[in-house]
Length: 250
Ligand SMILES: C[S@@+](CC[C@H](N)C(=O)[O-])C[C@H]1O[C@@H](n2cnc3c(N)ncnc32)[C@H](O)[C@@H]1O
Image 1 (cartoon, helix red, strand yellow):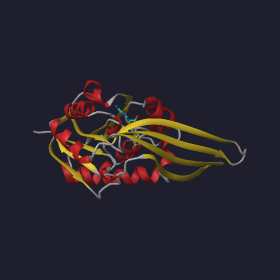
Image 2 (tube, helix red, strand yellow):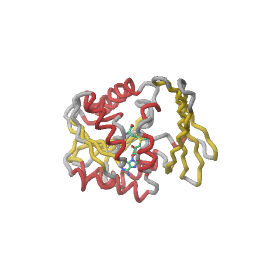
Image 3 (cartoon, protein in one colour):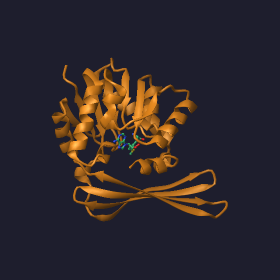
Image 4 (spheres, protein in one colour):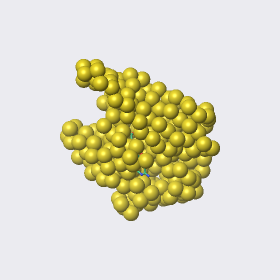
């Protein structure tokens, strides 16, 4: 898993047609959800799976005090560079979200984990462990916001292709797609990035492999409740993935 994101981090922005525009769009949407769920007093945000910074950078730009961590050292190194390039001060560090409380301590207004990061934990037990750590990181009344794929709507099977399309950057063209192979409720994922240098004519194929637990949003809400969160619910049509929210009891 660490290798997957370490290898992917130089290409990660290419998943998006326009990463910069997406940073701004996601921040605007997330900020709207945060204000609607927990009000205007939310300031400190802990992103426990920040990757190269897609949510952290945009939320910091909107004025949130963002602290961010991720399991992948290479993703963190890139997130740090991206923040510096934008004049943003975000403390980044490497941390497994299951250890978030031990690493970051408590008192945050909001804990965030976006873009299907939690399903990298492959059992209910591990997910519960992470949710309990997130809960401990919050002040009473603080919020937890997770976004995951709508696995309740995804077909199961082998050789399922998920294309991202073609990207062009400098003199290179990139073709990116995933292939999924289900085994029960887990699936092995191969991410292919074909890098074609149009000037030299040399093409390279990068293949990165990982694994996901296709947990349904409904079951993740049950685990959030087990982890102590109150007022857990699923919000649809407010982001590009289902958003799951819960609040630490006062
Ligand atoms: C699909 S990426 C999303 C990254 C970021 N939120 C974004 O949208 O750009 C999933 C991220 O989860 C991180 N991750 C997976 N398991 C983790 C864990 N146990 N603790 C912390 N981060 C983890 C990966 O390293 C990766 O950066």
